Image 1 (spheres, rainbow, N blue to C red):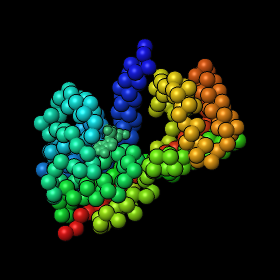
Image 2 (cartoon, protein in one colour; image 1 turned 90 degrees about the vertical axis):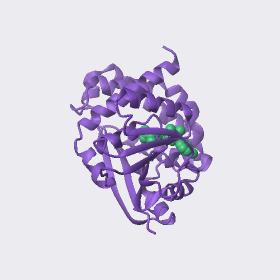
Image 3 (cartoon, rainbow, N blue to C red; image 1 turned 30 degrees about the vertical axis):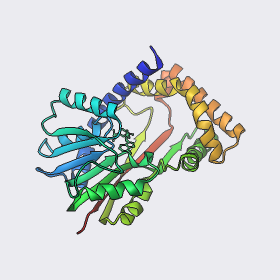
Length: 297
Ligand SMILES: C[S@@+](CC[C@H](N)C(=O)[O-])C[C@H]1O[C@@H](n2cnc3c(N)ncnc32)[C@H](O)[C@@H]1O
């Protein structure tokens, strides 16, 4: 299988894994519906919608009683989103349009709710984007962003030394991306400040915390291994691409090589030993921030 075909098949599979993950956490749809205050008859805009997974999720959360418009700057994503939405029989309430978040092709005050998921983390000017999202939102309507935060953890009680190294690498990588590309990859904690600067009021937040344990029986062994296998398949590329960020973030070449070697060795060991994998006590946690604000007149 070519590299591209492998990635496409992995992405399809990871969406299926995510669907199963949502099923195992029935409180998440409730969190989203109440936090975003989704109601029948609303006009919802999802900016940076990509292939439309979250756009369709919003339509389902509203029981298809809201009109949802996905916008993305990538034409291929818009095409994929449209096809998948037809397949999901959601085209009556969901549509898509090509557009840039810095210049959204909609009139002032169009939406009751304008939101984005994992978009601001990729932008060099997130404040400008949130201001533009506020422009297309009605007075009294809401702007919301769902983005990853810094709050997280990795701890292997059987290898505290590696745990420290992995945490250091995560921190260095985030710093490196900021220094080299001007992007805040874990932007979650900064969202309330950005929303305030964009002129939004009544800012509120929730944190969705996710924990991953290789031993978790709710996760199928085949799913756990599929994720590890994907990580393993992109190691070479990561070693090449990530080194510059880790260096810019303050790690030495020797530390980086040690981190990569140990990560690769751990993954190889887990992939070759199901018993070890299913008894791994390492704790992985990541957070996703939900932040919203109201547009006042
Ligand atoms: C990580 S994806 C998130 C996709 C989707 N929101 C989700 O959660 O599945 C980020 C998306 O933002 C889009 N994007 C990046 N810069 C953009 C811009 N300036 N205007 C509109 N979309 C943009 C990319 O094309 C990509 O589809």
